[in-house]
Image (cartoon, rainbow, N blue to C red; front, side):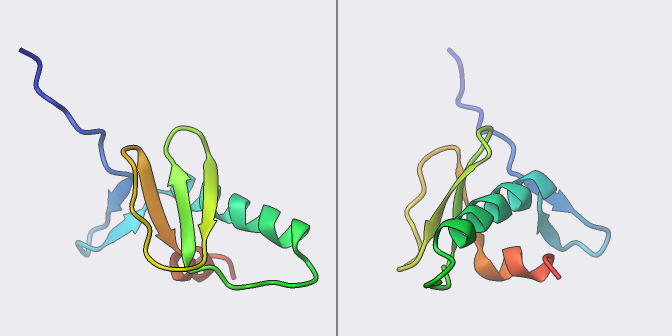
Length: 86
């Protein structure tokens, strides 16, 4: 019988025991937000975050409330995206 083995979480442990999102996850979330800015340059609404599909580098902006994630998806808050942009 094969036991379910979840995929490793896209987190990096630092020496201070704080968890950070993996750089590729942040990159995919920023890319999705960048595309949103290009398409909607005249009227921009601030999202609460981006849902990223792992392994696909695709993201979906979320504007309303905390999303319910499917297996293989991670939520990146806008604060996490913004914190490393500047």
